[in-house]
Structure formats: C-alpha cells, structure tokens
Image (cartoon, rainbow, N blue to C red; front, side, top):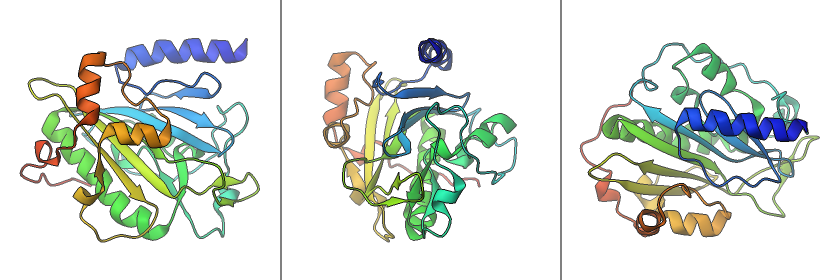
Length: 248
C-alpha cells in the first residue's frame, strides 16, 4: 500500500512538473522532487536515470552551492551512504548537477542526496563531465526550455565500492530534448568514465542507440511519429551555434 501511494503521488507530481520522463520500470522506486525525478536501482545503489526540465527561470541562480551530501531517506530499501565512497578513489558524481538546481534552497539540498550520486573518477567528474554539464546549460539558455535525462550505464559484472556495493559504471549518458517549435530536436552524449581531452562532439550518439544500450525508453511520451524521427537523428550542427558563456 505504501509503495502504491508513493507511485500515485509521484504521478501527480510528474504531471505538475510538465516534464518528459523515461518510461518507468514499475518494479523500481520512482522518486519525485521539485527539481528532478529519478528511478532508483537497488541492485546498483544509484539511479538508472534522473530527468528534469531546465528553463530560463531555473537557470537563474538564487542560492549558492552547498556541499551537504546525505543519504536519501526516501529510498525505501535504503540509499548508498557517504561511507561507501570514503577512500574509494571515486568522486560522488552528480547526475542532476547542483549548478542546475540553484533556483531554490530545497532543490539545491536535494541535489546532494546520495540517490543522485554515482561513482566517477575525479578526472572525469571534474573534467569532461563538468564541461558537458555547462554545455547543457548553454543549450537550455539557447532553447529557453530543455528536457534532460541523464544517468549511468548499468549492467552486471561492474566493479563495486563500499559496504552497500555501489556499482562503478564504465559509461555515463545525457539525452536532451528541445520541444519548442519550429525546430524540435534531440541529441545524446555517451562518455566513458575516464579523464578525456576530446571534444564533446566526439561523444554524440543518437538517442536510439542509447536506448538500445541502456534499455531505457527515454522520451516515450512523445507522439510515435515524432519520436521515431528524432531518436534516429545525429546532427550536432542543429545544436552547436555561437557558444554561450556559462555562468557559474
């Protein structure tokens, strides 16, 4: 009964958020917060995906970053803990970035829940992943409204850290949807969990291939006719115009 109530409340909140979510695996817990929604994978002790919308209001910083990492008490089975990462050599890497959640005190604090973290090598988390996060904000400013799905690529046999056996993904992804006319478009990125100096365009993939890899139906709420076309395209030129400076 408790799980059913959580799912019903989640569905109501999702409707209020007006965001495009991946299809929910009903065997897993869905957690809905004011800034983002995630599907928690107990086996790997992290989210399968985190989804949220960025618009010009949400990109306006109201609060400063506050590094208050904490377990997510809303995860019924218990989330990963800070101890899992201690001495592991891995960063507590944000899936929904703290810089995207600066529009309220509440969303900033919730972005530091361990359910929104995944083990990332420092060179990756503080390097090209951070660069991609900034690029997503640039895209959102340009589009004025952007729908983001981000997460780890989870599979069997991954290395684990800590007492809770948090899986260490080999790859991470971001899938982006610009739903505003006249140029509705998608783009996706797939990056290895390692330090890199490559240009971000070298990690562009179509959403279709990302769905085949992860088993996640990213933007299933779109009309099928539109979804089929957009998820098959790879056209970075639609997104990469004049660079917009990211404000930190």
